[in-house]
Structures are given as structure tokens and as C-alpha cells.
Amino acid sequence: MIETLKDTPDNVAGFRATGKVTKDDYKTVIEPHVKEIAKQNNEVNFLMLMDTDIENYTAGAVLQDMLLGFKELTKWNRVAVVSDSENLKKAVDAFSVLAPGNYKGFPKEEYMDAVSWVSHL
Image (cartoon, rainbow, N blue to C red; front, side, top):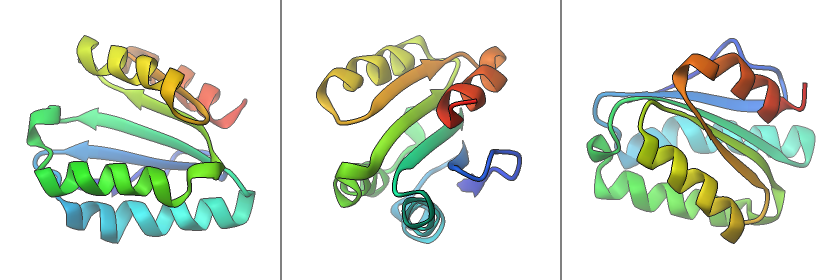
């Protein structure tokens, strides 16, 4: 399940993943909010708080995640992923070399640092 975070700055599309995450979560929650942030700011700053394991993402959710990256390809600015998984944080940091924008993984205890970094505060 994906829910929109209410405590993020206006220039950030912030989300929290819990339990099982499906393609419908991307289509009904993430995509509309990302499109709105891109329209308002001409860039996308994206924050994902992972309160579930990546294994709980369905194949459809993984595909929608990749497609979302392509849909606003030139507008991705900063992406912060907050997780206690060292492997996920390392993967996010490594992805930064391949994709446009800046990507950074943060441990959960640095959530506020992630919000500050992703929003440029």
C-alpha cells in the first residue's frame, strides 16, 4: 500500500510504502501526485519512506516504478529513499550514476535530513 505523506514541503512528492505494493498504488496514488508536482514546479523531488520490504512490491509495481521514471524523465531532480535496508540504500545511491537527477538513500533515523535534502532546504 502507498500513502501520500502530508508533512512534506510543497515541492516534494512524498510517499510511504507499507505492506504489499501493487501497480494500482502507482497508478492511483503516486502518478497523479508526481504529475502535479512536475506541473507546479517544472521538476520532481520525490521522497519514499519504505516501511515494507522491497520483496513486497509486485512485478506490476516494479514495472510501474520504471515507467514512472521515463514519463517525467527530464524533470527528475532529487529522489530520496528512506529505508533500513542497506542494500536498497546502496542501490539507490548507485542508480544516481545512471539516471538524470540526484538520488540518495537515507536510514530511517535520518528521515528529516532526507526531507531537507530532497526539498533543497
